Length: 400
Image (cartoon, rainbow, N blue to C red):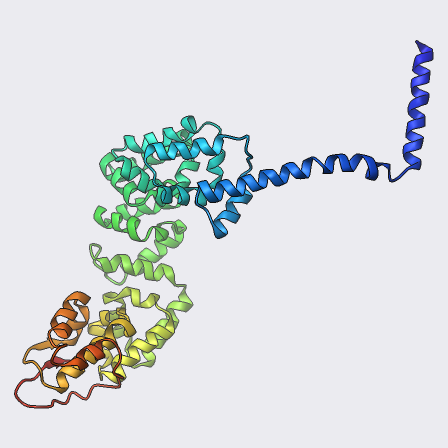
């Protein structure tokens, strides 16, 4: 036996010496063996993955690229198919499935979808949601399915019930904004704060539905903005209150001041600037060049005063090119030919919906006055209003 051991050691030493004297041995013999196998498997796996994400999940462009980097499976892995099958059986249309996978592609790697994903869908159903509502809720924020049922979703719902005071309102709030499930740490303290300040629950619903991003602000910053708006004496039940919170959250102090300076440069007093903000808060969210262009139009083209504009700043919220100028052009044509004896206020005319305006001011005159349609379509160059009437039988009295 000792002799065999000695012979084996001697043979092993000889092999080591030969290997050391042949530096290309590993390159010539060993590496080609692996090259002919591993890379080929990687390419096949990658090609299958891309094909699956594109053809079965409906991904394309940047979503396809991002998802392909997040998931890892090949043709022998049946998990992705079982996930898609679960969604289809529940009632998710293909466009909804595509969105879910694009947001949380890692969901395709769920080991047991029936045990991990379906209970979360069933939990939403148990909250008095219909299948259609669950589909809508998950599609709006697919990250819900990436959260733990027992450690996050259920505790979040219980916390919300405690804050709101009853289950039905908590369910209604989650229907408005499923993002509460995935932004819990930020949103719940801010919702609790609003309720303590006496904000009606109906306003909370609007916050969650339209401005959920504001509720995700750090609590200290959110409280600071709220106190600023409160100091301006907004009505808590007014939509202006919500818009004001959004506008002030949108700006830092320097941006806010630059908007105020811009309005003051047109002759607005500090009180008039505040009046503009209180009656149309979202104006302060516009870019400075947009504000400048609109204010200049009303002050120079229509001869309004800053005081007049501050009394009805809503007219600044309308598109200058798509609504204000075409409508003013139509009215100028009607004024010039004295076509009607009706009296209208310009701000009222700008506020009516498009269908009513076309019916009352364009369609009714288009046969006898082709210029009206041309003015509405922007084919007549608009310069400024002269307010001069042609003819004396009828007139259009417009309060500019």
